[in-house]
Structures are given as structure tokens and as C-alpha cells.
Image (cartoon, rainbow, N blue to C red; front, side):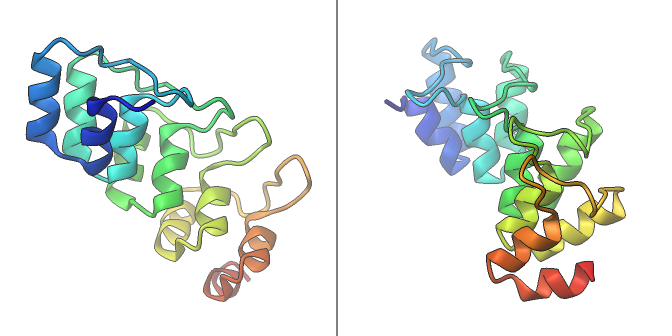
Length: 153
């Protein structure tokens, strides 16, 4: 299941996270689907929640079972400050998960136009393909994100 820390991190509730951590909860305790509290804090979009967990010893290089990095999570949600945060911590823009998705693929597939634009400006290659041959352009098109298709073209 999910611990109280997972729930507090997902909501980005820093005071509650601090309280829970003061009770001795393991900052690296995975959920039943093997996602870390840091993954959930990234979902919240709250950089301060991420910073708190890192201060307490969370592993910034944690990945999901499919190899999804925290940068990819931030891109899929369109969290530009979080994208910049992870890139400033050494994440590579072209890093891929187990099926070849990178941050740009996640942003394009999920309709995050501003994140797509930001990633391209930061150096993401729009021609990179996933294992099936799909590109950010085709993923955006397949999911009805015409504004991203227009931007990439």
C-alpha cells in the first residue's frame, strides 16, 4: 500500500511530511508498486517537498520499475521548475526508460506544450524514437495534442 509519507508527499504537504519523518518513517520506503516517496513528491510539483526528502536521504536517482526517472515524471506533469531542478542535479535530457521514452516523449504524449517547448529549448532532440519507432510528434498526434504537433512541425 501507500504510507502516510507517500500520501503527504503526493500532496506536497511539507509540514506533514516533516512531522511524519520526525516519527522515524523510512524516507526510501517504496509503495506496493515500488514507487518512492520522492516519486510522489515529484508528482506534487512542489520542489520544497522534493528538497526535504533529499535532505533526509532520499535517492534522487530512483526510478520506477519501467525505468522512469524523476525528470520524466516532472515532464509528464508539465512542471517546468521541477524539470529545471532535476536537470540542475545532473539528469540528462535524453535519458530513456526501458521502452525508450525520454522526458520529451512523456511531455508530448501527455499534452504538456510548455514542457515540450522548454525541453526543446534545453536541447531535447525531437527526432529521437522510442523502441517502437514513435517520436514525440507521433505520440502527440496519436493523443490528440494538435498544438504540440504544430509546434514540432
